[in-house]
Image (cartoon, rainbow, N blue to C red; front, side):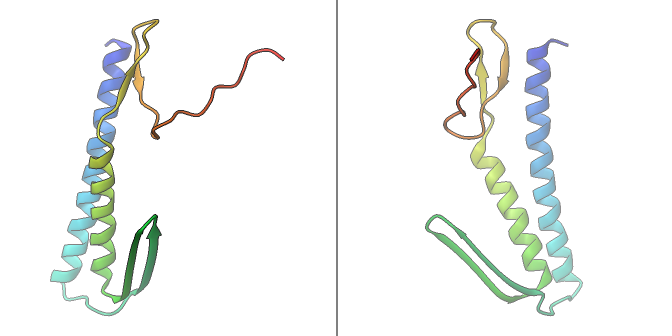
Length: 108
């Protein structure tokens, strides 16, 4: 197996595993609801940029469903990103942010 194929396969398996974990959390939350566990589990306050999420006295299943949905949405929004090294022709996963961190300079 070539190195490029290994990178692509690893990235695809990673994304599929993230989607599976998100679906598992959603399914566990659903199971808590269907089992009749409705007692308040606590409060959740989350802020991200202009977005705000507040859950007060939510059932335990709600936390699982919200976390599962967050994992799935985050995984899908990031997509599959690969960069091709123009010098050697090898592929590597893209930096997780729009801008890669600066590389340290050689020498002193």
